[in-house]
Amino acid sequence: MRGQIEAPAFTAGEAASLIAPVADLCPEPGALRDRQLLFGAALTVIDRAGEAVFVQAVADGYCGWVAAAAVGPACEASHWVAAPATHLYREASIKRGEVARLSLGARVAVLAETGGFARTAEGYIPAQHLAPLAAPAPDPVALAESLLGTPYLWGGNSRDGIDCSGLVQVAFHAAGRPCAGDSDLQRADFGDYLPAGTAPRRGDLFFWRGHVAIAVSGEVLLHANGHTMSVAHEGIAACLARIEAAGQGPFYGIKRP
Image 1 (cartoon, one colour):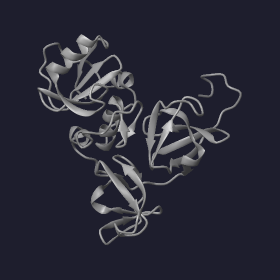
Image 2 (cartoon, one colour):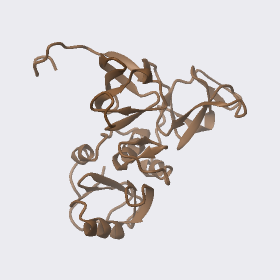
Image 3 (spheres, one colour):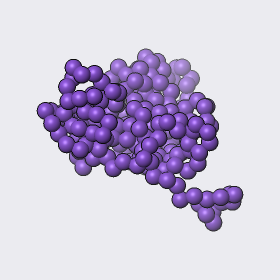
């Protein structure tokens, strides 16, 4: 930004990674979350203030403050968590106790495989729950559906809790596609609206003010929503009518990523 804005100092930043299973990304230290980051997320540390650090997420450019204890040295990830959630175990055994729970889309550096487990510096993960970064999933809708029943959480990005834009972002990132973290940014990034009357198809995105949903078929969509307080299927016609009746904001239209 040097030459574009005035500032008392500039920094190239410091490469880092998230070392907590999930961490809140906040507009100010200790404030309520804007978004969340998942284990292994590549970060650029820009500033530090006490027990908080100001970071930029490499995946989408989102900036905010996270707890300093959640940030560690940069790590070159090799795999991503392809299951809705998994556990990081102390040893290559499901009976020896878990270290942490990781969510869909978390990134890890696999050092070796042994006895059906992938060994990482932090512990062991069932190998069937991982996929190479070079092998993203082909269908973001299937990934989003794997999170059915996840409780709604404002600003959430994990299996423990997720919101509408978080669901879309996690699914598209796991499918190897860029995606912003907020619905208004997603709406701006995903091209033009389909002409009125176009039949929706699987993967289309529905946008309202402050809300986004993803089509499962021409009749059904999926979204993390405050109506059911969960990730749930809903009929497209019924959803459009319900939100309009509730006066929760205008329906902007459908986009096809």
